[in-house]
Length: 324
Image (cartoon, rainbow, N blue to C red; front, side, top):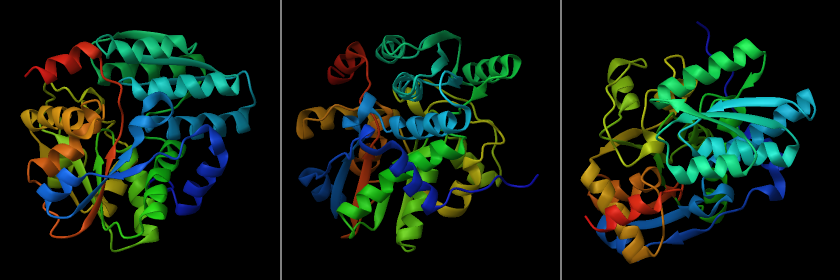
């Protein structure tokens, strides 16, 4: 099967023009403690402060706006989400006068489900897993003749995510390593396109959690394979992507390495961010910090930018982690 058209740097800049002031240019701040422990300079890209407190707002708004340009207002968009993309799409739909239907697992974090409903989207928190939510959303959209916008496997979503890398390299051209969470692969795909176009020698490193390693497994097998998924605090990175996801060719061709962090290291990273950096992140958002703090990515004097991808963690879960 022929590969889908790939996002380019010009598509990423078009996304930035499309969402304009509706998306925040988030701070890039240095961590003295992580720099010392990793043996280089560590900068944290605070997408935790993004609209809807997640980088997902970028791709969601770009995709919804592109849909509105083609179909006009008053249309309906459908998605599946572990929570953050659904929240981002709900926010974009409200701003654009669209209707949104969001399928999530029934056990998706309550802070995410609540926000989706508060933004006016129709929430379908019915499935037992993310994979089941995705199947239900795709089937619903196909049966109703509606547009399905994947949280990762979508041209405009990937282009929107790529704007994170553009901002990083505009603010700090000396960055030579990008450390990026990997779930379905939309964020790292867009960021890798932008980064390699701006600086071909830059290293793009993905981070998966031990409980869910579909792309680590895909790199070994040479294709996307189904993996067993275990429990993890990084709900946003948990689950198998669509076997035909368009993110795989980007990861195969543009990502230099993927490291895997164990659950204890991830929980320790969340505690570090709260107690030492005074930053709140959700489990999925902290995997890059976990990789550096656990010594999985020695920097050898280089400058790394680590994406803190989201802050939408339930308060009860955060208290539990702090009390570990």
